[in-house]
Length: 375
Image 1 (tube, rainbow, N blue to C red):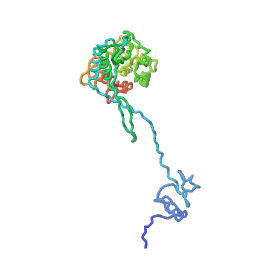
Image 2 (spheres, helix red, strand yellow):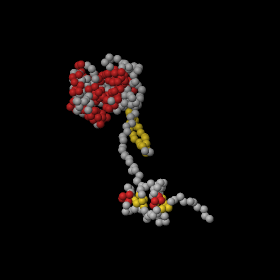
Image 3 (cartoon, rainbow, N blue to C red):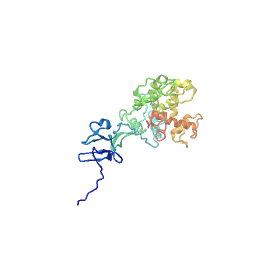
Image 4 (cartoon, rainbow, N blue to C red):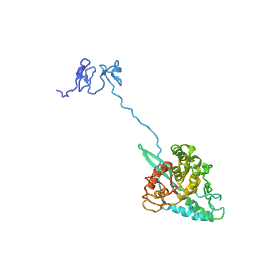
């Protein structure tokens, strides 16, 4: 006697489909020798003649009755999009601002004492704040793929120290015609005292490329939408005075992005429609300088070169102290002044961020208004 297994199938045929009509069965799958009840829950039996009425997803016919096809799997949905990612790195070079001022840029620096005829009308031009740079490689991965890109990492002032203090002084000490040529920048056109308008014919060639293109158009776009009720280019001076503000700030040793930030924040870039007769173009609260963009920028630039509240305890960072003192009506450095601190945090989180994109980890991203490390 041969051993076997008991079958648990219930046989069916087109004549006895009722055998498979109740749970746990879902109809009969017949064939030539006898079908079996189905234990899967698709549509009822179908044929090529009635598959359009019984089956939502078509019929798979068989000689004694077919079965409806199961629903297809859901489509795989995906969207591919390239996203540019900017990697911003802040470098720290201890005492470099002090070294730069002592050796090159300061009014009593060694280089200026040896080259007193610098600036407008002398033929020499002005010193440029040149960073040192090194090539860097960024590596990462996306969806298992290795991604690599290159860029440059800048260190503020170091290139200028090399250009003027090292090479420049050596050239001065040698006979005329010997030594390496020195690179000077074009000084910004000066505004005579009492003049209240900007110089509108500054060409783009006088402006470093990083402050042109999308950087410039972004600033002008922000300005044109700044003041409710006084929007549009006709109500501000952003378009005609942008190059002058940037080149004047650079010539004064002030971060031009910071000068643009204060200009936008304090007056909507000289929007006299919104500010009225007491507009302070660069936040200088002097009656004689209301609606006086030239005088305002001159005084602001002088303040920007001062290390206001330097070394005072209680401030989050040097720019906290500077901004608090700049805003304060009392003229004191008070880290506990809530109004002054709010001014610092508001400008950093909004205007400065929108113009420059420099804030990092809750801080300004520059040490002083003269710091050119960002943008």
